[in-house]
Image 1 (cartoon, protein in one colour):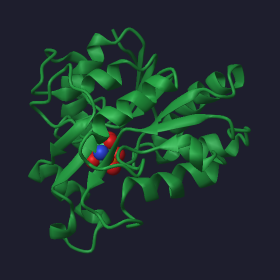
Image 2 (cartoon, rainbow, N blue to C red):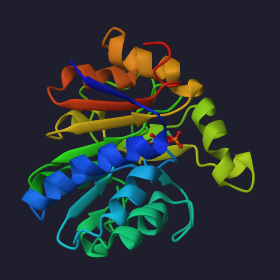
Image 3 (cartoon, helix red, strand yellow):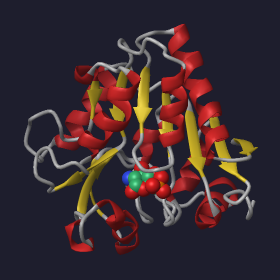
Image 4 (tube, rainbow, N blue to C red):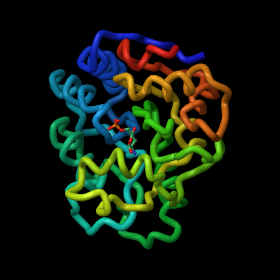
Length: 238
Ligand code: GLP
């Protein structure tokens, strides 16, 4: 059973998530953090930055990346993670990885990413947002609960949601590389955050719905150590 924390707002949620990360890295400076993009984790990163911890030895693995954006595109998740996480938190860029950023070919990138996570000893704490479609990482409905890092096609709903980051909707890539649900479940601790009414259905399905590939977030019910941090609106269907 996931532990649910209903907090007043995204700032309070960020404080609580940052607290989990701070506790971990204080115990072990080279902890392996599972990083997420999207607007949801932003308050976590700012709350963590305020603590001014030395995170230079921490290692990081991002959940996912678009496929097909030109190198250095500002909305590539490599660029987003650098801008929103690595730089403000003082992480060491070489210790932070994003699927497909190892310079190798796209073919086999998923397996290489899995191997890199395994070589680091696995993820200690994975931060997660959830999409309106119920996706975690970019595991859209229909993703196998046992899936590993691989190429996926984005749903039109997710492309439409993410169009706000691009000049026009047709610039949103159609494919991505994402950790699988099985990969995410291997992390030793999960912290899932969600805010706002638009996420209420996805949160209810993830926390209380049947565990099913048609609602990828429900995979968290298979994990023994999950903290779900939501505001009142995102909790409204629980
Ligand atoms: C994106 C990311 C997910 C994220 C989700 C929600 O597509 N790939 O990792 O959790 O969508 O985004 P947001 O937090 O901006 O609502």
